[in-house]
Every structure is written in structure tokens, then in C-alpha cells.
Length: 152
Image 1 (cartoon, one colour):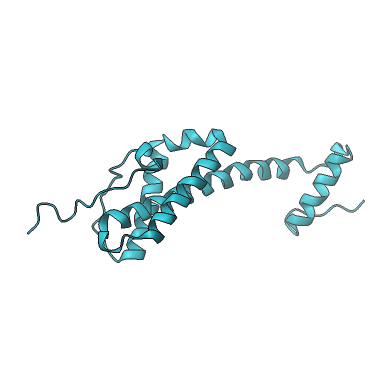
Image 2: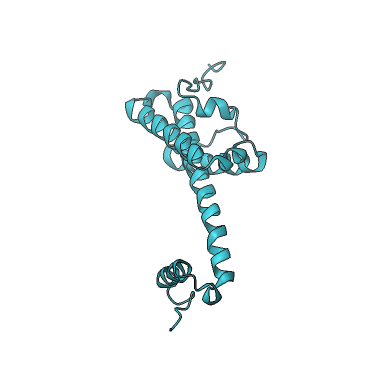
């Protein structure tokens, strides 16, 4: 049997490894690369969670800082991201701990601000997230515009 090289064609390699497992040819398995791929699955799930959260927060920032553009499209995006995040966490419950990790929150906030700056041209967003995770994920919560308050 000719073995497919992991570095040459990862898809063919993965199919071959799956065949080896199903056929109980454990001595032929590429254990080191299989372990890396399994770890990468977890990393991919974490990246998806962070990406969806950053998009949600960016839209909440736009909602708060550009009230003149608030509309059904933004509401729909906010609602869809919340729904997707809820489903993702339900499917992968271990991700819930990420939501409470301050380092993770700061990284997601930075990504969200970058998205919001790119999409709005504004650069007056807070240094840190002013909202709780519960607010962000709450289906009925939207931030209020506090920008113009106290300014003449």
C-alpha cells in the first residue's frame, strides 16, 4: 500500500487515514498528524465563535454610533448572529467558557472595533467593551446612542 504524504495532499491523506481507521489498520496511521488535525478542529470552532461574536459586536457598535443608519438590515444581521452564536454554543458547549475569558473578550473586542472602523470610517469607539456578554447575546437588547448626549 502506498501512503499519501500529509504535506503533499492533506485531503487525500485524510481520506486514507479514515480508511485505515475503519479497516483497523492502526499500525499504519500517521498518529502525529492525526493529533494535529484533531487539535485544529477545536481551534476552528473557536475561530468561528470569535468571528461571529466580532461581527455581532461590530453591528452593535454601528447601531449605537450611527443611529441615523439604524434599520431592518442591521437588526436582521444582529438577530442572525445572535441566533448563530446560540446554536454554535449549543452544538459545542465547551465554547461557553471562552465567552467569560477576559483575554478572549479583549481580542474579540479589538476585532469588532476594527470591523466597525472599516465599515463606518469612525474612530471614536471605546477602548474596552461597555456591554456585558449577557447584553450582547440578549435577543431583546440594543445599545442606545450616547454619543450626542452632553454635547452642544
